Image 1 (cartoon, rainbow, N blue to C red):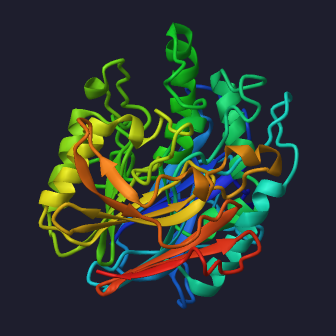
Image 2: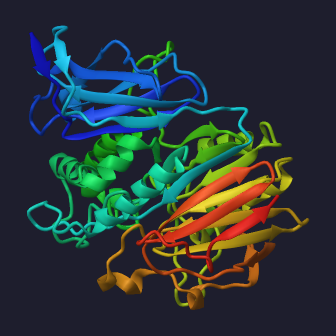
Image 3: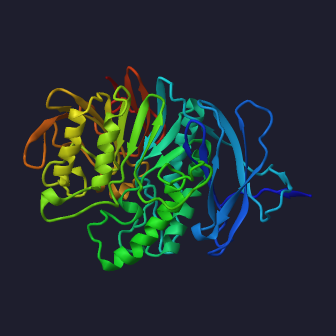
Length: 469
């Protein structure tokens, strides 16, 4: 008996692709499984690129407690190899002859730790107008992913990194904002199943981290008891399922063969070629206070982990991913308290850790501001920190006022710490691009290249930057 393999409603999404393992996510059509129902309905097969034969088909569990989704961990892979795979589902736990003809082929590339270079796509903030019926109203937001997919097919980057606001739970601010678990589940299903984004997530490994709009604008600035007990758990459950589960934040069992439990934190680290990445959670651990020295964007545990990470193998490239901008700051009256300039005391500690660290190849990747730019901070003592901000994968013309523009930036100028101590000099040698864009970031032992592309995949040379360490 032969059975046709069905396509997932969301996915497959290739997440973490390490040296010898990779994670693949898939979700069934809505309400296929009820809460408590768990079946080995997932099916996947894979092969090294260029090999004629597929692996034996592997089953994996899809769980009604997680919106009918599941993550399968592929083990025993070879470092530095490109793989193809097909993944789908059947409504049976039996081992049947399967017909894969309607399942698209996906790809991923495993890490080669001794490689002397790495390159990846980077962007953030994809606004989709969601109507009161919970449906995305047009396909404009999906068009830039067509260009990213085309560049990925041509250039074969190692992975794609999304720096926050992958979904907008409050696209009309409070009107029609997601509130319940079902609202957030529907938002992710609508967003991640748009065809061009679905292709990119199927054909390139992805790493993600949340920012405020996965919950609500400037979270937790307006958080009250009702939001903490209703909206926040619903938003985080959906984020855990659709973004964190296929990232290194979700713990594996001791054998590394399946997801062991829910993550107890959302920040994580990973490595690619010559670069180490620390992906910060700057949204869910915040401590707000009227006293500036008590304000924290990240927990003490995350701050300590960052300090330790900086000092391990200091000859490697150290990349901090912060969904909000570390520097530059904005001029008055544009200054805000939501980004790092509102948490100067903790920012001072992080930058001091960079100054004191033996690591010298320091990069910060950011999003949030609906504009793209390169900035450089020369710390006291001469060490340089390079910042690349790429934001506004799609940001509608009607909201142009909510973008960064160069006159808003306080550059060139000193960057100050919590008690008014100068930390270093900030400069922005190129232009500020206040339109939809994505980027290709390349790292090597010699330096880095930050290449910006507009929504038509044209290189924006006035913003792009090459540096040497």
